[in-house]
Length: 211
Image (cartoon, rainbow, N blue to C red; front, side, top):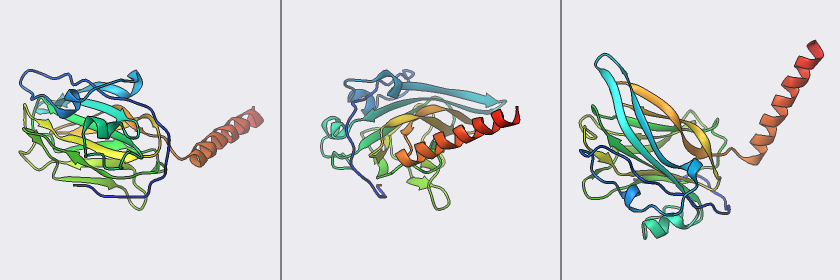
């Protein structure tokens, strides 16, 4: 399942990942297609939190592929045609059914492209892949139906594309409980970064004037 939004061109950065998961969890496509890596934007994040019987436990393998690199790892599968960064994630579930994963966007100011998944044998495709938000997207989301991504199963490679290079933003895995950590997400548009810096400068200036 792939949907499309506006995109522009950009230059590259090569990043991939290694899946770390319990022996009960099946090997994933993202792990099998690792290559050169930049440490800040490749690896595995352990999600583990809960209260009483409400828990979530999973490894999320993540990688940011440079424009063109995803098509080398997954021939014929690059949704951007080799023109954009591919932000890829894969869930290895270690607990109760996982029903959703979301990756935050910085106020929806990032340029966005396709969103979807790349399946493999024994891997679970999401029931829906979509950008979420009223008007401007504030997150990328992948939904799983009840019983679809159970204990010991791994998701398909979940992806979205952008011409913008990576930074870290909040990402949440939902099961009977929700847990949030930081994973790669595109940087905002340059104009937005300028406005954010200007806003910070004005705030500091105002504080000095009041002192």
